[in-house]
Image 1 (cartoon, helix red, strand yellow):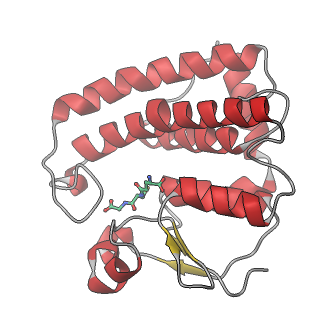
Image 2 (tube, rainbow, N blue to C red; image 1 turned 135 degrees about the horizontal axis):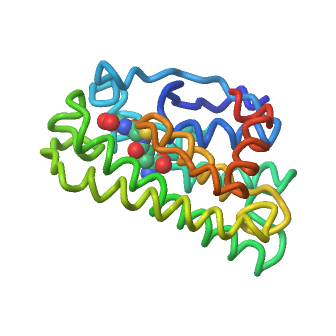
Length: 213
Ligand SMILES: N[C@@H](CCC(=O)N[C@@H](CS)C(=O)NCC(=O)O)C(=O)O
């Protein structure tokens, strides 16, 4: 239990889900505050004072520091609770995990964000997160769909000869990629039936208790 920390979450959004799974895999419990993204609570003065970038997840530490990104939250939790390791043990392992985590973020999550934020009517004027409003660019949604197809291909070929994305052990890279693959389901993008390595990996991860949080 980390009673002196506060986790800012939104139960329905993909990015805080990454942190939620990470926290659960570490066996931690952190007092949680839900931020109502649907009603724009992230843009209000109260949350802006916590995270000026107006995004969740965020983690408030006992000394008042606020970590406002999955990267910093994962880094911090890995340092203070090293077991089980989710970011690698040895140099090469750490580096390969970092690489696959970056791939899952850019080719998976950001491609999904391109689709959702540039096509849903509810995201009009909110094509990027943060305090400033940006107009939608519909072409980016089409491009995002193509990119997700490529992402599934990449994951499937990698998982044909690796149990997990960065090798033999479950890691933060699997969390990020899993959240991206499930997020794709929101717009009915799913792996092809012949991408069996990807489907088996997704099914196995969906059975981890951490992903049910
Ligand atoms: N790089 C950030 C991205 C966080 C992010 O994009 N969060 C979304 C929810 S999935 C958000 O807060 N959106 C607020 C908005 O749409 O205004 C991270 O992973 O920590």
